[in-house]
Image (tube, rainbow, N blue to C red; front, side, top):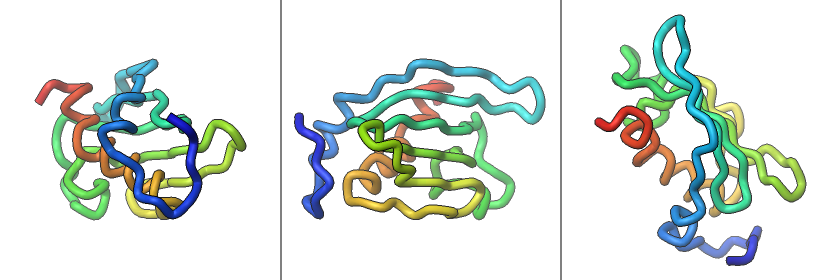
Length: 113
């Protein structure tokens, strides 16, 4: 797979095949876990919870992710930042697909539900 910054829509299954969770660090206060990993040439950190947020505004879609940071590895550019709301919307189609993939299954991967 080659890194692609064009406006082409990336193949989600190809990107998902590159997902590597390198660390899951449970938080002692307020629950949740910090999840660190890589996907499709990007590094990510996410704060993921076993339950949905009390306020839907504090959660990325219906994902149980309250914080998500994604940076391209090759040039260290932050392409996504969600901190209980959007600070940086996905900057590329690839970044959008990464967000969609993580939102769809990261909590299930971490908590098994």
